[in-house]
Length: 230
Length: 230
Image 1 (cartoon, rainbow over the protein chains, first blue to last red):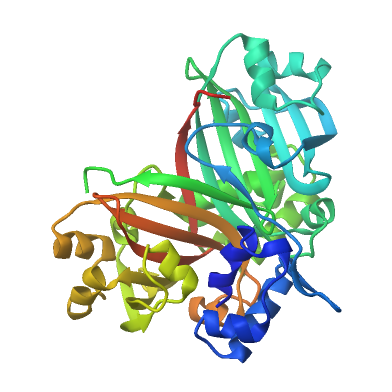
Image 2 (cartoon, chains in turn brown, yellow):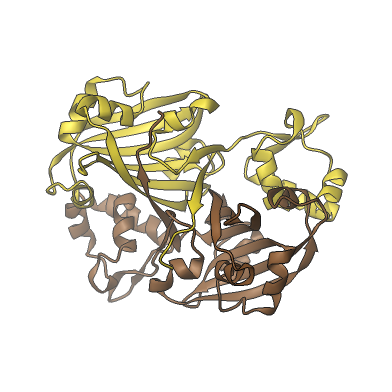
């Protein structure tokens, strides 16, 4: 029942963001009022709805769709939903550890640019992004407006090259203490964790990001073709 | 530090699945031994590693990659990683509730086939799949071997049509009590939740699935092109 209600809550189905009463929902969903109540409790636990005295059950949150069919920065992607702001918490040159160096095709200990950004949509925390950039690409960015602009656009401006492809891995993790504090969610909340390595058009990897999205704020969407070679 | 170690743990980097000692990791990752210890605690909390007396820290789990560039069933997708088995917990004809009917292009209350399957990879719980199929496509499946075969293959066999595209939404949710019990994870564990609506080649939606993957067992992978129209 919760799985059926969730997309409606998130999709803005309910007029004025107020859910119908339990009896109506039970009929609509062909289930018991108890099942509706438990489902609403679950959704309230996920921070999607709340019960307001005298009003009823209201939608409190909206999950924003992030498309997966092409490589795009967060601000590009969510432009129609509001304003992305970046709180730049760290921007400096660090030495690449083994795994970071390997992903960027560098020697271990090579100098790379490190960015830590807390990203908000319409003022609410959406994601915590840890970014490693190769020095040639990243160093010029340090003097640019990282708070107002997507890194992707800045990379293309600085290099004069379009970005090519990105390898993206998505998993679900529970929020550790630091991420929970930054993203203002309870410890252990489900986060959508993306690891994205982006390449310039010439194929060179230049931008390795670890992005933790609030699970209650963002979902990813993709349309899949049925491929050959099964 | 945990983000850097996680892909190595999951990627099978460590010989015999045994991690190097903390001192080595601290040097390798250019951080304090305390930071290494905390990161290992986090990864242990995620069920990825464990500490074995006399052996050290070992990899206990592996996250299986699920590609996102084309539509494929789970068994097809993970074939090289082992054997998928399906425990069919429910397979029957039910009346479609409003949201299910809407997604499948049916009238509310239309008869649809409902499947509930617990899917295991090499015997370990991987996902809990709730599936709704249009009656013409789903009913013939009820007499076929749902335990041994992917629903996608069966749909193509029954309809004589290739599947076309699917719309996929991915989010991170905390495990509710039922899902936690089925998937054998602690309550609240991060799950990767997929909602997938698959269409026949002629465009008709026939298969709506809600799939909860154990977050510690599966990650999704996709290669993104940089699109136009920014």
